Length: 208
Image (cartoon, rainbow, N blue to C red; front, top):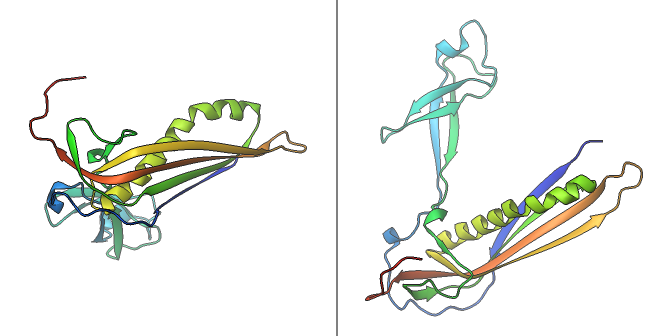
């Protein structure tokens, strides 16, 4: 019997009021959300050659309007000259979001705070003794996924920081009968307050 697993990531906002901005920050100074770009292309005869249709393992390079070139996978079952569309999703700029368990960022001033955001990552898998012991090394990646989900929402809330973040990990097990493999579920939950922070004037310079 093989090892099976599934994973689900969810997120949302807890309804509530928030105070108005102390200072206005233009959108162009905030991290940008991810966006989807749909590209149209046609199958060049060179990748089909003796084959009558594409097999799904071919790729071509497509030039975008801004001059950039990206590799695109060609769908299976197309003939030379046929058109297809490819949707590319750019990642949100989560690396530009401050994430901290602290209520504020040293050297920064909080000028806006919005309702609390949450995220959960649920990981189900069949497990034996070895898999239970190994799960401890996998919790870090689940924490990262939960944080990434929150930071994406922070960007959509037009903020650049998530303050007072907290994490919790729960798990439950169902013992196996004959195979020795039982079901285990691990749930990682994260929450935090989306905020806008700006450099504080006259802050001290140093390193840590």
